[in-house]
Amino acid sequence: MLDFDDRADAGRRLAERLGGLRGRDAVVLGLPRGGVPVAFEVARALGAPLDVIVVRKLGVPFQPELAMGAIGEGGVLVVNDEIVRRTGLGEADLTDAQRREQSELDVRVERFRRGRPRVELGGRTAVVVDDGVATGATARAACQVVRAQGARRVILAVPVGSPDIIAGLRRTADDVVCVLEPDLFHAVGQWYREFGQTSDGEVVELLDRAATPPTNARHDSDPADPAGPARSAGTANPADAAHPGGATNPGGAAGPDGAPGPAGGTDPRGAADPRGASPGEANPGGGADSGGGADPRGAGPAGAAGTGRAVHPGGATNPGGAADLGGIANPVGGTDPGGAANPGGAAKPGGIVDPGGSAHPAGATNPSGASGPGADADGPPVVDEEVWIDGGFVELTGHLTVPARASGVVAFAHGSGSGRHSPRNRLVAAGLNQAGLGTLLFDLLTTGEELDRGKVFDIGMLADRLVAATAWLRDRPDIAGARIGYFGASTGAAAALCAAAEPGADIAAVVSRGGRPDLAERRLSDVRAPTLLIVGGADRQVIGLNQRAQRRMRCQNQLTIVPAATHLFEEPGALRAVTDHARDWFLAHMR
Image 1 (tube, one colour):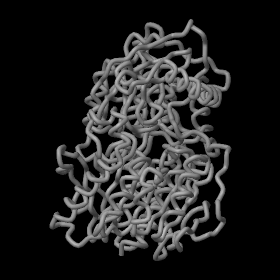
Image 2: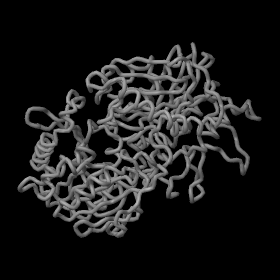
Image 3: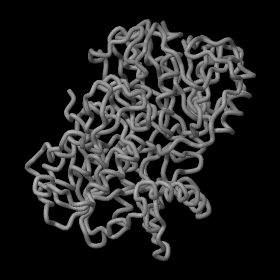
Image 4: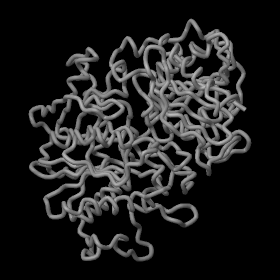
């Protein structure tokens, strides 16, 4: 069931839960981008000032989705000492990460503020608002930065969130207000009818509107008017973006394709979510968590808090950046190494797909994968449950989703400490589910193992666990006879290739996203499953590694370059392209 019409509706309903803050010297802070339309409605109802909270997480060098700290405006540095200690990193590593993120932070703060000073938080109640929480990483970082900036009390307010993550966040913020905490939570956007991309321009316009007293102030500030002030014909509401059919989406601009509606909703990172849903958070379209993975306080899947420290270097002002890791596409464009276009179809060994995109098999035209062979987009999955898998000496936790009449099941091999809560892989999984494919999202590493670099790069161990999960899948009577495929990211891609190279593996297809096939070099020639290698155009080193791996592979394989995308595919449209390519590859080989 969809519970919010759009972000504006979610903001009004969230404001009802926060009515006690009216007149309490509160400041409402929206996480760009998608959190700002929600925060705008909250600030208007409370009669409170609106601002943005812009942060950047500092990733562990060998596990970029695991954060060892965060930076914010005003020179604020929050450090998770436990993560730094357990990963064996030093001050030099922290300084390097801070220097890398600072320039991006500066650019994004200028983009949103355009010279406007930030609202001072000293001694005040800060209400951090986003459009939802999936992994909680950016929301947690934002709360820590706000506290370091002097807020007396920190409240995190979101319309919807994963129950276990919300529970963990209650140990970071003084209070957490969440309208919906559904047990079967997969993505923020699944709880919205309209979840289109929020643009930079909308964020700036909403901040301008909040800072400028309206001419019809009596109506505009009346919290009892849920519909907001009346607008004359031709007066644009910056939170409302027209859809091609004339309908408006109060929650955000129409997606890049101009396709409205829940089946064509645009993911905040620019990637289409087949259910109008986005597993991600703070990013170009706005959800709470930009990078997924662990958070600056060392939270595991349940959001357990770790120790941290906040540093104010000399009180120097450092204009900061955005909480979303999506941002503007990397200006370094990707190129097609071969130029041989073969969008969506099967390629001959060593083939290279045109980086522009992929075709949809069987006439499917919905870029989110809502149609296609075996699709049952309108019906509930026949299996949608948490599962526990015997991984030998450990028990692996996962989530299995199988649509009706699924033609196959794709097991996700998460890399570099990223687990089943990864918003990137959850987005891809949602696209595969909508196309009629089952998915198994599970953790190859336990919470304790994620911080052990030796375990992260133990490809043999990861492959063994993937093989065990594959056997577990094949033993389930409810998916008997279904073809099995692998989707691997980073080091998980190497594990997927090694598992697929096992004698008698019988894997239908493999897709690697930003993978490290070089780590499976000795087994590459043994892989028999058709393999698609997807790499970001700006991820130069990994492109080279994948090209060398291609030359060693004897199976049908294809290299797809996503233009301008970096290693984590954070740029607008990048994850959408990954989802489309992966869906098409699996559908072509798992019938």
